[in-house]
Each structure stands twice: as structure tokens, then as C-alpha cells.
Length: 320
Image (tube, rainbow, N blue to C red):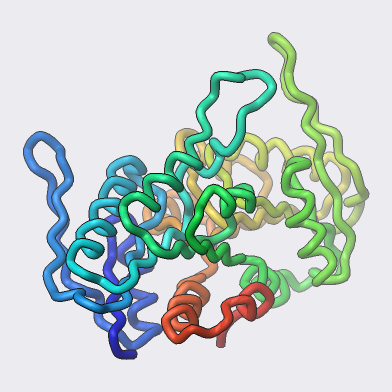
């Protein structure tokens, strides 16, 4: 593939390497370091003049440092005369701060701020995966390809859950209902959702299950899990409602704070996440975590973008 360069930020070098291997390319030379006052410095170690540049950096770990590093890398490539710079952001940072709620009317819309920062730094195109709200694409004035983990999730379910024809796909909150119905339709099975009633002062959340899971395998599906309070609560609810087994499938496994101990104590058969965020360390402490590799989806979207081909094939197929 001529005139293409792939650079890796420091957030997820393993995923960047897998993408480069899949495309048969070497990762570009880049040195990122911090000055003693913690300022980030990036040096691109090879010419990018006239090249189609892709920078892979996920929104995980030290999120603010990694975001700043991405912005500096984009800018460094842009002012070194790259013809096009694409930011490949498997897990988009600040995606949950995408609107003002009724309650906190002085809340920021930080996802829009991040979109502006990426545009101003010189990004020409964004490739991301399973945005928390797909409207975030509209925060940008540049093209955004929001890829889906759904085809890889369907493949995993069919290959790893023997009783998948007798399962119910469950959304742990009303917001994920659309995602869940899409998967349920593709598998031709039922779906259910859990309605969370917001707690008043000193009251625990009440969860109401809408749908039937009696004597079935329940598969919880969501776009991300952070502290895992909701999905662990939901798993208990499903078992008490008569589910035989509970799996959780999540695109972005953030797993911060008490998440790992909660999963270990919960009644999951498996908690399945994609590798948009590195999971090696967490898997050592939690045998229930399994990982779906989505590097081939990102690699294929880079190849298609570079060659000017359509990317929409990837919305419903896993590249071989």
C-alpha cells in the first residue's frame, strides 16, 4: 500500500501493531516523551510529506495525556505536509458527556469540545467504534466513520454459546434498547430490557425487568462498562427472574475502580469485551473476562478509506 503511514500513540501499542500486521505495514517511527514538567513532546521520526497518515490512539488509561498526545501527533503530521491525517480512536474519550441533563443544566458537553479540538489540530477524518451516542458524529464538520462491533459479537455468540438459539438479549438500560434489538433481530431471538428507576434520597435503584428470561440464557449487551455497577445489578436481577446463565458482552471494557472485584463476585459465565482498550492486566485478575479481537475491522476500514472504497460493508460483516 503506497503513500500510507500508520503511527501508534502510547495508549494501546498492541492494537496498533495488530492493525499494522494485518495491513502488512510497519508502524511509523515516532518518539513520545514527557518533559520534567509533564508537558508532552512528540517527534515524528520519518517523512510524511504527501502521505495518507493514520494515527491510532484509544481513549483509555491516562485519558487526558493520551488525548493531548493524539492532538499533538495530528498537528505534527499536518505541519509536516501530510496530505491527509486520520485519527483512529477505537474508544472515543468523553463520549458520555454528550448532552445537558435536566438535572445539571450547567453541565459541559465535553464530547463536542473534544470534536472541536480534533478538528482544530488538523484531523481530516475520524474512525471510531461504537460511539456512546451516534449523534456525536454530528459534532464534527469532518467525516466520521463509526464502526460497529456487532458483527464480531454475533460471530462470538454463535461460536461460543451452544444454547444461543434459546437465549434472550438484554439491555441493562433503556438507552441501549436499539443496539439490543438489532442483535436480537439478527439472531432471531427475543430481547428484554431493564428499566432503572432513579434513586431518591437514601434509596437504592429499583430495577424492573421488561421481558421474559425464564429458563433461558440471558446475554447482557452494552456499549461500555466502567465500574460495572449496572451490569452486576442487572445480572442478579436476571438470575432472580429465572435465567439459567448470564453472559455480558460489552464493546469497551473500561473496568475502573471496583469493577474487577464486582465481576469476580457476580454470577456471570463470562464477561466478553473487545480490545478497543487493553485488557491483559485485567484478565490476570479476572478469569471471567474474554476478549474479541476487532483489529481486523479497524485495519479493513483503514485499507478501504485509503483506497477510496466503501466502508459500509463492515457494518454487517466481519472481514475474513
